[in-house]
Length: 72
Image (cartoon, rainbow, N blue to C red; front, side, top):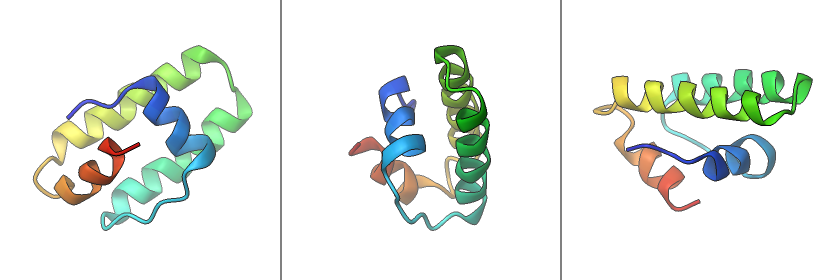
């Protein structure tokens, strides 16, 4: 599953979702602070890439979390 920049923006700025994967929650917390320090489009694109790489690498353990993100 690949998420879009718009979905990433919703994750980082608006949605306060609970995920089963602690690692995904920690990644999003880190990316929220990175984006808050530099809220430009390239930062958002880098955050999207990071989330997509994480979801691809840990696809088996993040299926339920990916389904939540897909609904955004």
